Length: 101
Image (cartoon, helix red, strand yellow):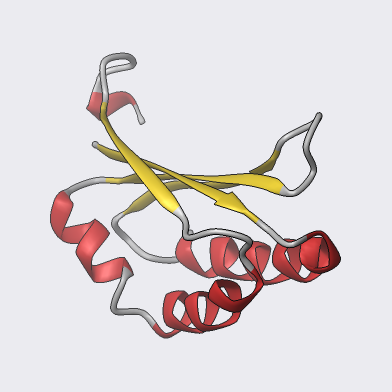
């Protein structure tokens, strides 16, 4: 599994818009065959901070995701409302075994 955490800081006046476009992107992403999980989470003590937790079956599936219309629509709408450029951290799966996802 390829696991990606995307860290985002949203301008305060755009929190609800960000949630809406990110939920739409997540819903569509879950229809991709190589996407195992796609979570949108918001930090409790700083509601401007979000994280996307994306789990892909392979690096190729992660690359394919970036070619989808819904990802590109999300990116075009999200970038102008971010307070800083997004960052990401990649992880590899330890437990449960990949076959158990």
